[in-house]
Image 1 (spheres, rainbow, N blue to C red):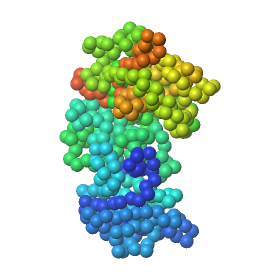
Image 2: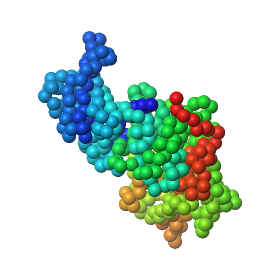
Image 3: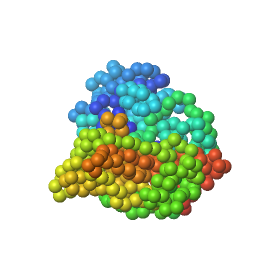
Image 4: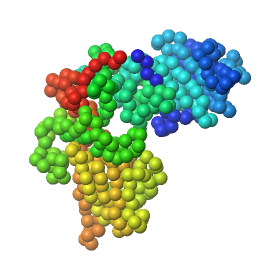
Length: 445
């Protein structure tokens, strides 16, 4: 089974590339799809136009709605509505110099065929590759190869499932899934030799995906739940309408990772778990299980209002921030969690200021508000947090301590919890049944 993967730019946000630079580790066939009289591409118009020798660079740009390639004499003066780059063999890698990817640097390489098309003055790139070649790269990007085999097998099934059923549909873009963790799951290309556990996990789960009610299941995952996973509808908005909360998904409901303190997930229960010397949960072994961030009053006052202004200018975040009638930020007085999910995840948070109360909704928005360049903090690790306010002699806020549990949104499979369950003797099917109750593991058709 082949998968079509949209390749984003170096910022992992846009599908549009000003120029695409391509070279192969072995020869590549360059196929031009010419424009017909009616301005559409036909299958009969596809024909090899040139051979790109190993290591030779080809640059493709969009000019007046058509693709122009530079780097081969045979392509001079020719234009196309689509360019395909086909590897000479299954061992040939297609590399895109200048496209930055964490883990592969500025020269990511891929197995498969590359399709390039024009789009509003830019170029779009789609990789067509085998589903398990995609899973191999996702595993290398998403989970340590040192984890136990059964945990990696659970991740392999989840990654394969997500490839054919992402949260945000890309059908209108002409591919199945994109390569960005900001939208789908991270796919950084081939990184060389594959870890033994990755290879075994792919082989021993070959073709297997999660299903629910005879349809592919949405197999979300993150790093560490901090003791308890979260309901889908407490963390995500509807991908089509943007409504929050969206409709619940029956198999994406929060489950406990073990024995939890009395009162969990209240603030008291969360603090008891954070302070526990030996938490009895599958993910407690992780260094990300608990963490703490200390913010001075100067750090908060110096950046938070600017961060909120930037979020209000971003259509992805703005609908989930409610300013006070004054629309002014003012001096920060205190933070208050207004609503929590089943894991203790903050769903709504108030920032009380001298000019009124600001309200933020959704865990990613709440985490992002705490971005602080002075501390090198892009966002809080999770929204499973408890606040401790520090005050000066006049009762004014002098600092804030954030006690947090886990890393990520906490919905679906938790990688550190899967590793903990594998170390306790659970197999990958038991792990998946725990995190996705009511689903089945079946072979993709």
